[in-house]
Amino acid sequence: MTRSTTVQINGERLWSELESLAKIGALPGGGVCRLAFSKEDKQGRDYVEQRMRDAGLEVRIDPIGNILGVRDGTGPDRRLVLTGSHIDTVGTGGKYDGSLGVLAGLEVLQTLNEHQVQTHHAVGVVAFVNEEGVRFMPDMMGSLYVSGQLGLDEIEPIEGIDGKTIKECLDEVAFSGEDDIPVDFIKSFIELHIEQGPVLLDKELDIGIVDRVQGILWEEVVLEGESNHAGVTPMHRRRDAGYVASSIAAYVRTLTEEIEGLRGTVGALSLFPNLINVIAKEATMTIDLRHAEKDRLIQARDLLHQKINALCEKEKVRPSIKPLADVDPVIFDAQCVESVEKAAEALHYSSMRMISGAGHDAQIMASKWPASMIFIPSQDGISHNINEYSTPEHVEAGANVLLHAILDKAGMSTL
Ligand code: GLV
Ligand code: MN
Ligand code: MN
Image (cartoon, rainbow, N blue to C red; front, side, top):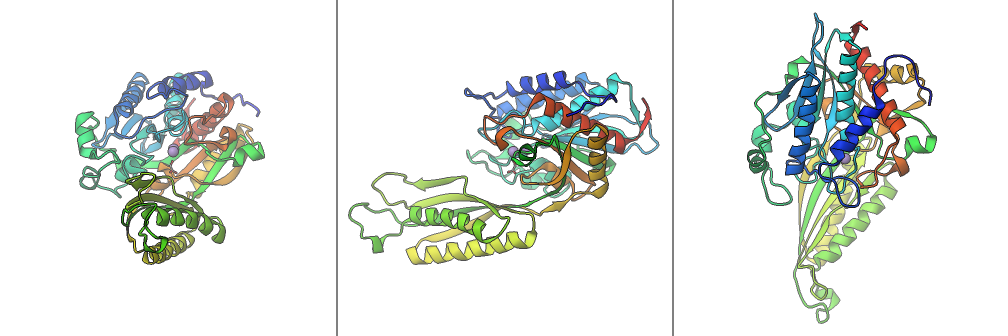
C-alpha cells in the first residue's frame, strides 16, 4: 500500500472514533450490540449527532431517526453529494459494519474543514436507521424511507422480534426529529463499508470498487403440527413441525448446490414447546436467499415453496409463509463507480471491481440517485461476528478513497 501526498484524512482520529463508538453497546467478549431503536442505538446516534455538531455541520433528524449532517457548497448547483451508512448492529455485531461508513464520512467532512477545501456542491453524511433489520424487518429501513419506498404509516406499526412496535420505540427513546432529509436536493450517494467477505483478503488488495450488489429475499416460515409423546407416537402418525423445519433447512443448502451463485441461510429456527420428549407442535424459521440475478432468485424461491408444500403435505403440517424483505439486485451508476476507481488509482491503492454479497443502504439509494460503494478488506472474511476486524491501514485507505471520490463528485473550488 503506497500513501499519496495529496490531501489525506486523519487515520488516527478515525480509528479512535471507531473505538469510542464501539464502547456504546460493547459486548463482554468484544464486538457490539446496538439493535435498531434500542437505548444503545439511541446513545450511539446521540454520539454521532454530537460529532456532526462539533464539526460545524447543519444537522437534520427525520421522523424515523435518520441523521444527516451537511457542509454547504459554494454553488451555483449546491445539491448534496452524500455519503454515510448505519450504526445499528446485529445482536453479535462488530465495530466496523456500518460505523465505518458513518465515521469515515464525518472524518472526510472534518478534513475538508481543516484543509479549508471549498466544494461546489454541498457534502453530507447520513447515519441511516435500522439497516440490519434483525429486530424490525425489512432491513435497510432508513434508506427505504428516505427514497420514498416505505412510509411512516407503514413503518410505525412494525412489530419487532421482542413484541415492541417501532412507534413505541420512537416515543420511548425519543428517536424522531421533524426534519425530513431534503430528497430533491440529493445528487449522489457513495458508501464506504467493510467487505464482510474474503475476496479482497484472498487477492491481497486494499480497495474494492463495488459496481453491483446482489438481491435479497427474506421470508418467515411458520409450521403448525401437533405435539405428542416422543416414545409412544408411531413414526407414521407424527405431525412433526421440527422434522419439517430441519428438512427445509437442509433443502436450502441443496438449492445452493443446484443454482449456481445462490446463497441460502436459515439463521433463526425455534421450536415449540422445545422439549426433549415432546414432538414439536410449531416451528418458526427464517430464510435468507441472495443472488446477483433476479430471475435466479425467483427460481430459488419458487422451488423452495414447492418443496415446503410437498414436505408439509406428507407430514400433515400446515405452513404459512410471510415475505419479510425483497430487494432487487442493483448495478451501480457508472460515473459514481468511476469516481471511486479514479480515487483508488490516484492514491496508488491496489483495487478491483467487485460485487457486494451483503445488503447495503447504497443499493436502496441507487434506485433513486446515482450511487456506488467502496470496500476495504475484512480480516478472515468475518462479519456479523464480534471478531470482525479491519486494519487501521485499510480503514485509512478506505476513508481516503472516499474523500477523493467525494471531491470528484462535489467539485473543488479552492484547496
Ligand atoms: C445486512 O447486513 C445484510 O446483508 O443482511
Ligand atoms: Mn452494514
Ligand atoms: Mn450488517
